[in-house]
Image (tube, rainbow, N blue to C red):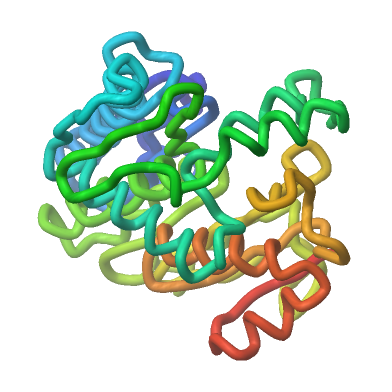
Length: 291
């Protein structure tokens, strides 16, 4: 099998016709699987996926000096006009803020200074949360598409929607290129397009799920997307309080038509706390909650 950053697709020696492209992007391992007899198609899909994931990462990472986020931060207190792609993402984030009553907030990235999980173990500094919350709140942002005014001291962070957007971008492009079975998997958030694979469905291993309608930790997926929110090292923080919602599951995995939709449902459910399952039931989505 290829190394984790092979990039170009390589055929699986154990399953002829199954091609896999693996690479590092967006802070983790990514891969694209394709069932096809067309080696050139498989390699083109893998190369596009790597290029697009890294393009989105460069454009929206707060750590990239040339990113849109860095440009917005450099113009704090002043009007900054964004491009159409960024405007759509900001609109999407604003919509999630509204439907969550402010629990989801694109400006809440500052709370990472109180919640540190770099070592794999969550460490919280409760004394920092009140001061950080003074600089969190989408309602303080001047947003009139496509112009944004970010108040001094605040930040924009696309971390809650960027990776899922990248998965959908790659999946939609793959759909225009082939009807062959394709699975796009960026760090466990994934989407499949095209015909079902030869085995009838993709078998997805998900460590965050309970054995609820699955075989162990495996999910059979023939269409649509999966996304998970919450685990021991990445709690979902309510932007209004600076803390996880009371009674929330350890993690939630949701199936939906797109990766962005699945991620939004799983995140919004986590922010419902003890009412997570009731929220998902009311929305009529397929889910797995781990408590």
